[in-house]
Amino acid sequence: MSTDEASDQASADPSETGAADDERAAQIRDELDAIEGAPLAERGVRYQSLVDRLRESLERSDPAAGG
Image 1 (cartoon, one colour):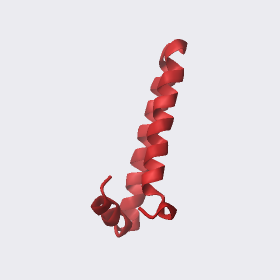
Image 2: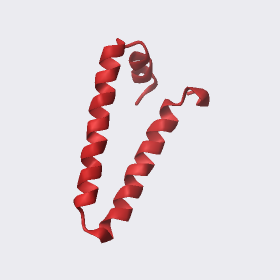
Image 3: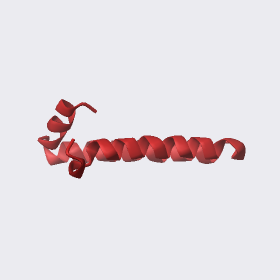
């Protein structure tokens, strides 16, 4: 997400932001379901990939980070 996108999202209507959060949560649930359905040997790598993406997203959105 670019700085402009973050600014737009911060000033967005709370109901729109909530809808976007709900959509993202649904995407994560779907991805978790797909991971759980994968062969056991593949799950670790796929969980780690998801964790890495979520961490990067959180770090980009953290207002304490000054970015």
